[in-house]
Length: 198
Image 1 (cartoon, helix red, strand yellow):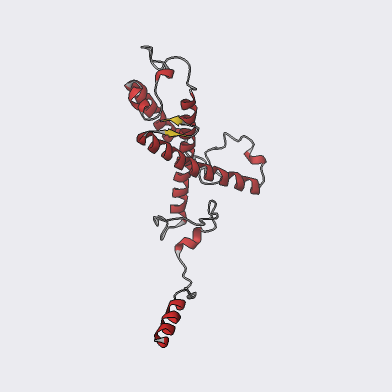
Image 2 (cartoon, rainbow, N blue to C red):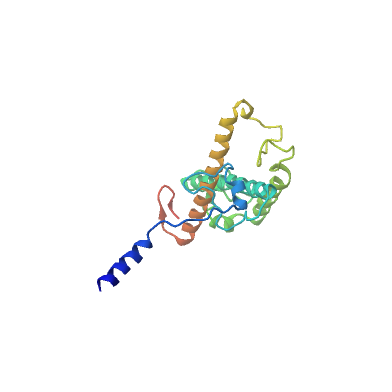
């Protein structure tokens, strides 16, 4: 009985002993030093979008991430501002529908006149096709300045530029989660701090 107990204890203790893990090299190691890889997650690719990817694929996904992050930042800010009660002055159409009468969130889509929605879609399409693109081969992926806008960017040193790009990337990631959360809570109903009743 003592021998069986001793064997059981030895076997269970072995379960907690560290085991050797083979060091494997993957294609993901190529992107582990890119901007945006930071603690606590490090390189985070749970869907495996970068498995066997090259630099061109990574740059395309980074471009899309930055663009969606910028749009999400505008969307989140728009949600907060309009829920606070700040709207454009005047009317949205010639029949007298005021901007203030348009509800917040998803309800606005049904309240905006059809011609207004078509104008919004056309404007976004124009921005997508002609404005929000890298024409001149910018300094980095997502650089849409196109040698026309600067706002002092060229006065920064390389470390400051890298820091500001990282801040934009993280703010975009946070805004994507934030606007998703607001949209989900709006569909669920209830109240959210700062935003109020949804």
